[in-house]
Amino acid sequence: MKVLDDISLYLREGEIVGMLGRSGSGKSTLLRIIAGLIHPTEGAVSFKSEPVSGEALGIAMVFQTFALFPWLTVLENVELGLEALGVPEKEMRKRALAAIDLIGLDGYESAYPRELSGGMKQRVGFARALVVNPSLLLMDEPFSALDVLTAETLKTDFLDLWIERKVPLKSVLLVTHNIEEAVLMSDRILIMGANPGHIAAEIKVDLRHPRDRQSGAFSAMVEQIYRLMTSGARPGVSPAAKPAEVGMYDKLPRVSPNQLAGLMEQLAAAPYHGRADLPQLDADLGLGTEEILHLVEALRMLGFAEVAEGDIHLTAAGKIFAEADTQKRKQIFAEHLIASIPLAEFVRRVLQSRPGNHAPRIRFLTQLEDNMTEVDAEEALSAVTSWGRYAELFAYDDNNETYSLENPA
Image 1 (tube, rainbow, N blue to C red):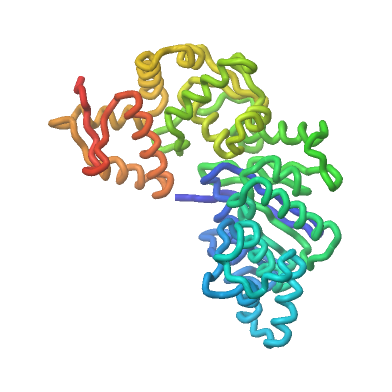
Image 2 (cartoon, rainbow, N blue to C red):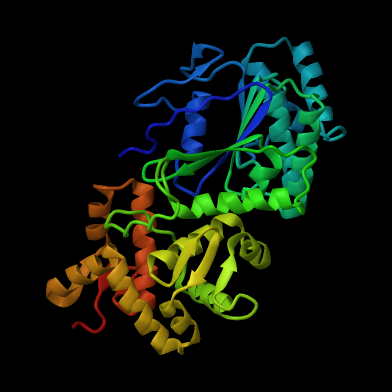
């Protein structure tokens, strides 16, 4: 099963490159291949004209999770990378203290991770990466585990260090799912598509720092990226092309029917009246770019909404659903689920064909795993299970991990 396909990219000195894409598009896998933590089955990575095989000197990484050793102090956590490089103790202590001071944690050298807030823990992660004087810094959604205010402060502080050349970095590759974050920080943005992961588009960000999120140019770029990310187009394919029908082994967004119903209600009501600009909807609802995109994709797959030019609008069925009572909603949802999602129709058909109308979960999961990654198979089956139960197409007993028809046809 291919995770990445036909990937070709380069990083120039003096730029931050953002990599955007939905969950499962291979962003983190690609980052780990570049870092030398995963060996690709095909192709090669070179750094400073030398092939990367194993961890490469000059490349450091900041992870989404803080990944600190709880039994070590801040200073000891930062020193780890230098210790692995065999740096003499006196030099190691000097460089670690300088990195801690640079990242704004002076005074916390003897503190343990349990004493630190999330933002402070991530600062330790940055110090640990920077202390080895890397030329290339890889960042895997480093702000996503932080609250909004803490994340904004850390982004600003990092950009200040970068712009003022207070860090030894030559290039930065930032993986994120947040469109505004990518536009705020990046000089160039790569948009990843999925199934398998590929670079669907590349955008140059010609905005001077510090960037004003309220400016027309900033908003226009965010809008452009929303259009590209919701079009599902590969290079050379028109963004206006009709999205392909959902296949039996396609990835499915794991969102609940209640979330979908809530979003349709919001879209049907004022001020949207059935149509909304996605960046504005994202800002209004405060759900986060990733969650909004998953919800929008699910509505599109089910035929309750259409997406074009960065806007979402409810179809006639979506409007009827939003105004219907609970039982009518279930009926509409069931009709669309069977018609639009082959996996749901398949589960229902297998149950109808079996004596007693029962089937174990492993029956469906095994078939999916033969054609998808284990993670994608789990996600797809979980999504269909949630949707099918809501629509009363079938029942699922979690204790016995068994599907059944409550009212066999």
